[in-house]
Image (tube, rainbow, N blue to C red):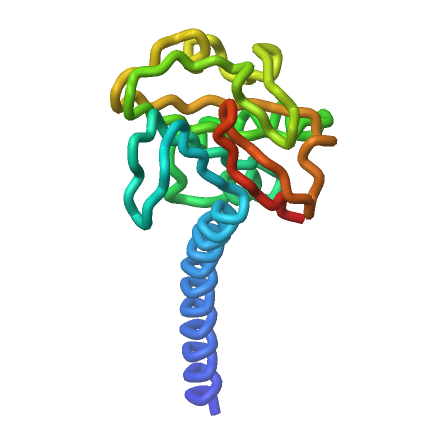
Length: 185
């Protein structure tokens, strides 16, 4: 009888250890997949002076990625591993401004041809941005600077939430180069 109880305790302990290992590993995977699954619905690209032809981009001055950093994505970034450092560093701006009536966007701009970046040319949901809408310091944003070939810029902008209503379709872009995007609910 004592042997049966001892054997059952060993089997029980082995099952507990195995389930803890599976749960811990599953947790990391769950958060990583959560981050990766949230980004596509919160991102759109705008091609400045360019045309997309299949997988080719022709004559573009640059590409601008607009990534909407809302509470769900911010939480996933905080809890995930494998998030790019440039994006993880931008999450602090949501934590500081997300709940203050602002919609926060991480912008990743890649220049293919030289061009001077003007913040007043950026628009999100019909709202035209100004210097006061830039959350990153002037050292980290390209406004008033010449973007050169292959320059990459990452900066954070905030617009009043009334221009980014959940479920609505809005336009984001630079000057007359706009992309349509549906705000996640």
